[in-house]
Amino acid sequence: MQATAQGYLIFELTNSPQYLGYVGFAAGVPSWIFMLYGGLIADRIPRRTMLLVTQVVMMLLAVILAVLTFTGMIQPWQIVILAFLLGVANAFDAPARMAFTPDLVDDRKDLTNAIALNATMFNMATVIGPAVGGLTYAAVGPGWCFTLNAISFVPVIVALLMMRIPAIQNLVRPSGSAIQHIREGFGYVKRQMVVRTIILLVMFVSLFGISFVQLMPAWAVDVLGGNATTNGYLQSARGIGALIGALMLATFSGQVGRGKLITIGSLVFPVLMLLFAITKVMPLSLLLLAGIGWGYMIYINSSNALVQGLVPDDLRGRVMSIYTLTFFGFMPIGALLAGSAAERIGEPATVFIGATIVLICAVAVYLRVPALRRSE
Image 1: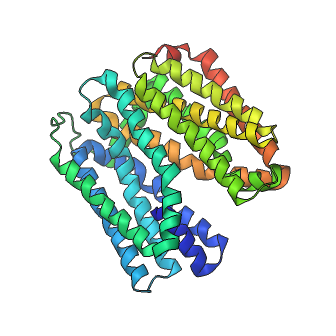
Image 2 (image 1 turned 90 degrees about the vertical axis):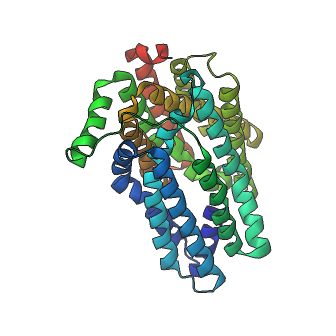
Image 3 (image 1 turned 45 degrees about the vertical axis):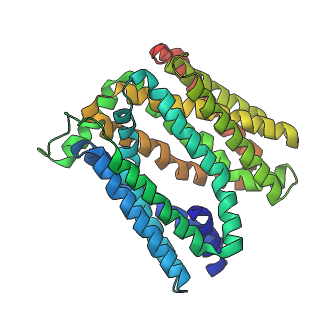
């Protein structure tokens, strides 16, 4: 809701699409600056404590945005600065949140299920949130979108305070420099072939695969001859497919090895993208997008769960910060590349080339790293 309202608001204030880019960049650049350090902090202090701090900071930022909006003092530069600060909070929150999940699961066999349930909530939010945000914005204005977001942090903070979890015995002591401890995380990734392979595959998918989502508005108009409603259908189809994938993982967790699921998802995703790139029929496009969302969710959730299951507790925050940086950090670069390529060679060719690169990478992993598909 907040992201949707923030986009509407800054466009209303400036009537400039360029400011939308400023907000996106301001929100994304802290990942590259702070996320690795955030992973180190997640290994140095209790992760619940770190999450409490980040949640309180995010709540305060939403309150400031709501107050500025209600009082009529809001300016575009303020939205950009608040987006940057929220990005900083997210850079510390994301690795701690990922590393915190195994702390809540007694039996590691249930880890895939836990991560899938989390993804289910995330995808429900991405399907429902923008629609509710738009309706709320139209009915009562952006200030209430920001206010509702601020209020939503209260039960999260209360839930974190009520949790009773075992103390982590292997927290990193602050001896040595931060750079040395961060290098330990990279050293672990370099030594562990399966973890290293997953992170490299995630990088290629983020850079050349999922970036096609940024082209959907243009695809709806230029390829399918539709309008904004068509774009909504395309986005919803992908979200529904991802939601089905997350629910399937949560339901059948433990019955299929995580390595096999990664292999299935990493191959299904680019193959369906190739078919989507050559399709100009609306019903088939929606069906393929649902399949793309399903394959992506199967792949990315299983990758997350397998890395979480392999990494020792004392390195989890740092390794997950590398994973998270790879996952989120290369998306804006991929979006920039996809947009530039589409401007020159068109959307279908851009998606086809990106899908081909991802498929080649997935096939290479299948042939060269058989240990991955045998991993549980």
